[in-house]
Image (cartoon, rainbow, N blue to C red; front, top):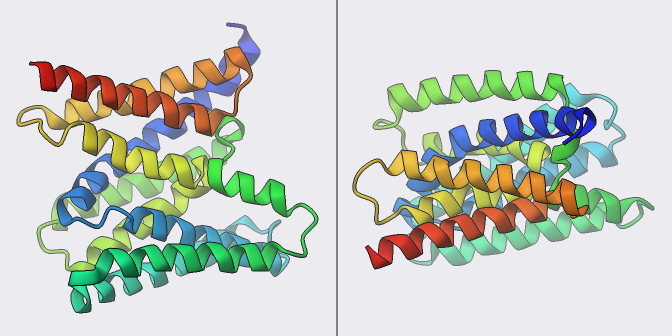
Length: 248
């Protein structure tokens, strides 16, 4: 591996670690609550905020983009909290519909943009190889704040409190790694370890870290799309752990 590859891969790997730090505990809670598609819906709604900012000509003002994306995601969090509170028996249907509507509105907003295909691809699979230092620092600060709140208040968070923290974490990670990798980081480690009685977090992080490391290396070595490769690598790692657990 040459120096150039290392300079690209190290920030990308650090971005993956930051994403896993919040997404593994949130993913476990999502799995426990039975709202599996909530992360996809919130990620898509946060992405819609980014699209709205772009359609308003604010793409060169990252702070405003972040604020609009965060506001959009918090609106999504309020919607999901209302759904869970008032329509629990059909919540997955409502959550799935929220995802589809957010995606379609985003497509409509981008329909007159000649670069729409490229923007949509970035939103879905991300550009993790091009993460910069300022993004890493901002995400690290937000991650630390979210973890402190989660540690101190997670037992007292209501529906909206949980979804609000969830939305803020996803807002940052969608712009780092894309919607597909956000979903994988939330669900694959949690799903691969749901039978684990001891050291669940240790095994979950092992699955996530292995997925990012192998996926990044494979994408560079074989010139493959990075986000999609990391998702597949993480899924393989999760499947391997589940297989070992089943045979044990």
